Amino acid sequence: MGIYDRPYLHDEEHSSGWAGGRSVVVNLIIINVVIWVLGDVFDTPLNSWLELKSNLFQQPWQVYQLLPYGFAHQGVFHILFNMLFLFFFGRELEDIYGKAEFLRIYLVSIVLAGIVWVVFTAPTQSADEPPARVLGASGGVMCVVMLFVMHFPRRLIYIWGVLPVPAWALGAFFVVGDLLGMAQARQPGQVGVANVAHLAGAAFGFLYFRMKWNLGRLVPSGLGDLKRTLLRPKLRIHDPDRESRDLSRQVDAILEKISREGEASLSKKERRTLEEASRRYQRRKQ
Image 1: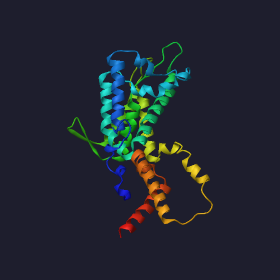
Image 2 (image 1 turned 30 degrees about the horizontal axis):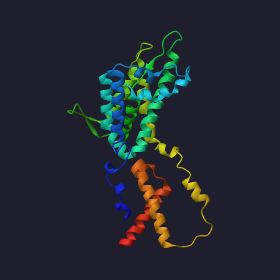
Image 3 (image 1 turned 180 degrees about the vertical axis):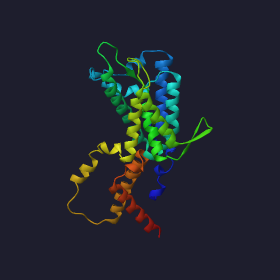
Image 4 (image 1 turned 135 degrees about the vertical axis):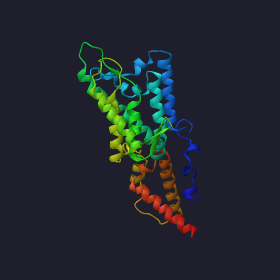
């Protein structure tokens, strides 16, 4: 089988990705909607357990709140707009970065947005008033929107399906709106618009694109490569068939990585391996 005929080079919808092959964006929306129904529609204490509070530094054992607060929402419009933006802007980014890297970007942006919100909000709280609290996916969604804007600044976005607006203008509108929102006084101890969290998410998306980060490279790749390096024989016997099989296995692993994390996750060595495999494949066809 030629390397370009392998199934994971084709459309990812047939792959066995996260949760039965559904996109990460769809799964995130499902999780958010389920939590919203349980916590807000049924009016259970769930939201109060998940929301992030401004006294986190005084109660560090509640650090777990830095992630789940981004999956809880209050009010139908809160979740509606967040999930619409995630759906319309996130799917194309998932195709660019791959399922795993897109999920890492989204989750990290939620955590970072929460940390920044606590840092900015905690000093404004007095000891005799209840802590401010925040919930919602807006920090992660703003990161997604900013990444989309950076990739496709001139893409036309049709507001309500009618008014065409370039992506860069929509992104600028959101950023300016949050900057103006930060300038307005907020009532302490209440759930409001966490403008600083929005800006933190947007800033992370901007820096991720400009700095060409890849969060997957921060995850240890395992001990497999180290073991092969340590056990590599000192003397090598030239065996073209074995070399071809070894190259084929390397290509399989690299293409699976592309399917999971996107082409941007490849190292220079992995790109050279694909180029060598392509040259050999072309020579066999001639």
